[in-house]
Length: 252
Image 1 (cartoon, one colour):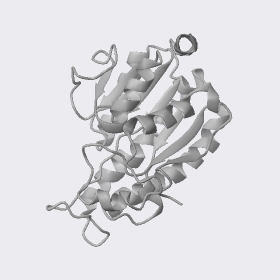
Image 2: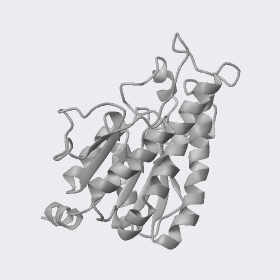
Image 3: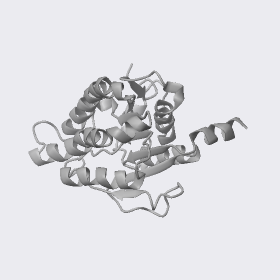
Image 4: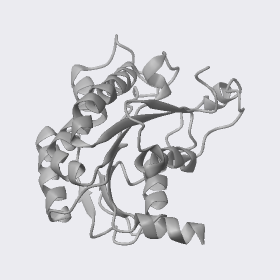
């Protein structure tokens, strides 16, 4: 009964989710859809019929967030899909973490400038472009913005490259700035920082890191999705400008 009442309360709410096609994004889409939310998904890939939420094909925006022009065009497409209705949550989950030819970590010494640009456009700039472009709709919905950062944003990681790590550190700083700027609009802005999460892009050798994590296991995409949902729900109505670590104690 409590579950039904919660779902009824969320009915009519809308989420815009980037990086919706796999991993944490996929789990997040399913979490919100199960709670009765309409999910507008953005990803570089065409919509997959295996996506788990109703209306997903209709509410799919295919966009390459590394292209600034396409990102700005995506704002217009989302506005059209919303049709003047409020946006209650924006989750900036899309991210890229390029590797060297043999899968090695790309450092500050060997990352091409064009790679830096691609990574920052996807991992950093797209977040503020989407939020700023949809500020009216977010304000109408008294919405919540959640930026997905990373544990790599606060330390040198053995697998995450320099461009990825610094883009995530910048995104954490952007979260604070946006919380300050969007607060008067009635919009909260927070972040979640996952650690080692079991997805299909894990690097070889991750098991050695997990052996040092206090909880001694990988995180699951659904566990990150749960934290994201909390930050978009009324349960966190006075939480803004914070970054929640979702890493089994890896940061301690």
